[in-house]
Image 1 (cartoon, helix red, strand yellow):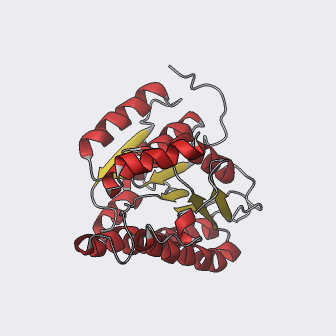
Image 2 (cartoon, rainbow, N blue to C red):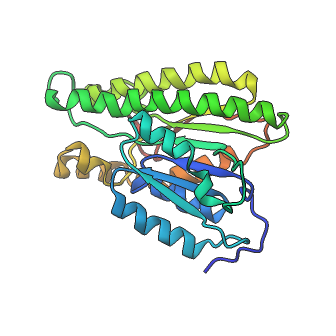
Image 3 (tube, one colour):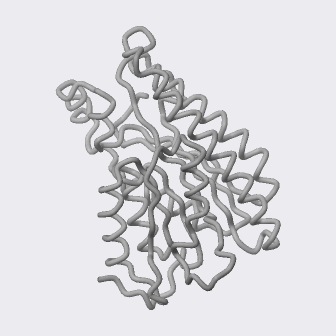
Length: 275
């Protein structure tokens, strides 16, 4: 059981995390909760979210006995799910609070991989991957951007920060012929992130792009990577990154003073030379 009496860096903040049921999203949830944030979690797998929410509420109790976290299960690419997530703060606060605050940390993490290039990948999976990785991210960036602008206007920036954190990939910056269809969606996300930074930064909203290299998680299995060949690759560059490495980096970024903006971070294991 963690102590709830100590003042923590994210005590006054609310984070919304998509893709929270596993990997980077799950580790972000634990790490940000340990730093005092309240959490709205999203993923498709409701049972995983129920278990995670219980863990967070038990291990990181709040001072006022309100929930540490809540969840909205559903497809993060659907606008209806996004709207429910943005409105879920009412579940984290006393019901007598007429206007619960909105999340001021949005982590756009939901996504999926796909093994293979434009020549070799499964074409039946292209549309769903583009819908999840690009269109879903774009919808959340738009919705969160509008809400965070209004939030910063209402509280006289630079009094407090507001953060939009977007998960890209090294293959969204450095072309890999072995995962070019997945990489193309991350190239597009990288472009959206930089454009959003230029549009929202002057309004007090920080937009940070995180581009991890190879991170060991269930991502590889879901993407259909060959277990033996990819295992050999990870062995050659070990120790590979863990989801907690990315969570620690995100926590560092969002903990900075409102006037400091870390807009772009590429993270690789020390021995990963490519991509």
